[in-house]
Amino acid sequence: MSVHTLLHIDGHLVRVKAGSSVAAALRVAGGMGAARTSVTGERRAPFCGMGVCQECRVLVDGRRRLACQTVCAEGMRVETLE
Figure (spheres, rainbow, N blue to C red):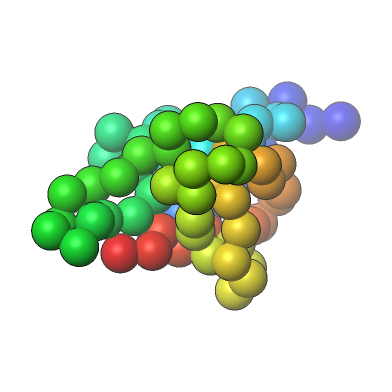
């Protein structure tokens, strides 16, 4: 089993510890862990960490997912929703 996982976030290659959530990968990638922007343009980060608040919605391999509830996989492509 690999110690790290490589995935793409908004076109940038990101390396995270194996077993990390996409929300954690967003934090590692920078941008203060933001998953999307509000209607006023403010960057929004995950809030509850358990899928209730919906603040961590992203596209994972073309499908809408909650970043806090999705485990990173090798080669995964994540697009933040802005």
